[in-house]
Amino acid sequence: MLGDVLLITEKHENAAKEIVPYILKNKKDKFIIAISGESGSGKTELAHVIAKMLRKANIICKPIHIDNYYRILPLLRTEWRKKHGIQQSVGLSEYDWDTINKNIEDFRQNRVSTMPCVDLVTEQVDQLTTDFNGVDMIIIDGLYAINTPRVDLSIFIELTYHETKKAQIVRGKEPQNEYRMQVLEQEHQIVLTLRPKADLLINKEYQVVEA
Image (cartoon, rainbow, N blue to C red; front, side, top):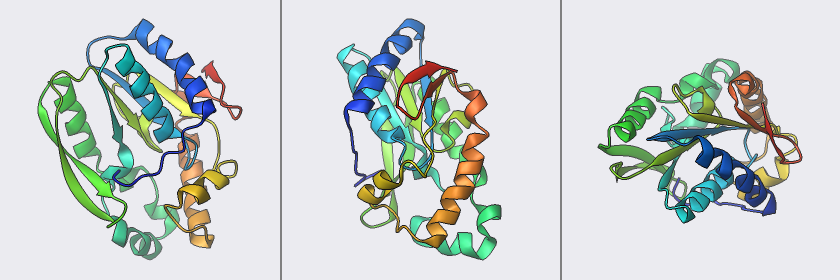
């Protein structure tokens, strides 16, 4: 996402240092990694650090941020959710999974692909064109990323929105109000159902353990 704020800290570096050897040990052609967790848990930061470390190992790994794939445009999303009810509208169905899967298949087939990219300054959606020929791996990060089919390595961050409140405020992507808390609680309930899909867990101390 254009204009996103990354808060990379020592905990992200340390977690990536444990995960990258696991990736290198199990890597194969067109390897796909997915990272799920709640808002502010460090998904995007971790994806960034892993990709940078893999680059040092001569592996080109491209992060793909699932929040770029919302069906409803950023400027319209709050009213849409309020109109249709948070419990009914917030969840997996908010995302354009057809486009996500198409972009992943383009990666597998070494094709040129066009992907959505949200500009957080204008709250508009741009289009990003990427040539996946020569890209060895992708990292899909997002609330429900490990729900993506045929992922080779699924990582789940166990921090909840209660523990990540400070990070959410610092990043400042959305106001912290009653509506936002209701959205976070609904996301929390759905994200928890994906935990059993994980191969690796990052616990509340940000230590990496096998699921």
